[in-house]
Image 1 (cartoon, each protein chain N blue to C red):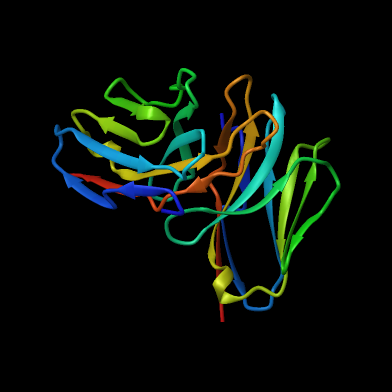
Image 2 (cartoon, each protein chain N blue to C red; image 1 turned 120 degrees about the horizontal axis):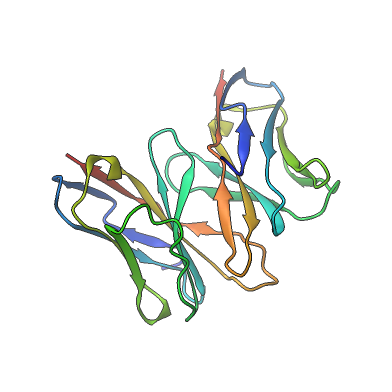
Length: 116
Length: 112
């Protein structure tokens, strides 16, 4: 597709269960970001992938959160043993990133996670 | 401590009013300042600012950056109900790993 695609768009789960959120970035974009947006809050950086480099995981809130990016394209964000405070919209974004490029991101529609 | 601070957090105006939204940021390894509009889900890009004093303009929206005072403003003239959204400011910076750090946003409500 032409834009960033995320799935599922909505996920309701029970506390303690694991969830996987998927992001399919724009073809050719080497940079991929995950952000989290809680109700009424700004976007909180989680993790950043750039090409084949080691990801920047500095924003992951706990070791229950992990992400991978296979083949430099699709990314999966996994949250293990979900807690109620994990409830948020998880936004994925991609960009054509190079040192000369200063950062326009293209966002997906997000995955809304609700932990009961 | 927040790196990108936006003000006001919310604003209610009438159609036709002019609004100014504010964003201050930190300077560490600064590369650019970006503005996004978020209506429901995906933020959409408005402006990217890298140089001080040069106004970017798109229709009724304009933005300018002050690198000395470390802030940017977003102006919207002759507001319309369709301008109602959350406006997000982001600082693009980093040492080796560039990332956008977003402010909490300004929620703008334009009433008829």
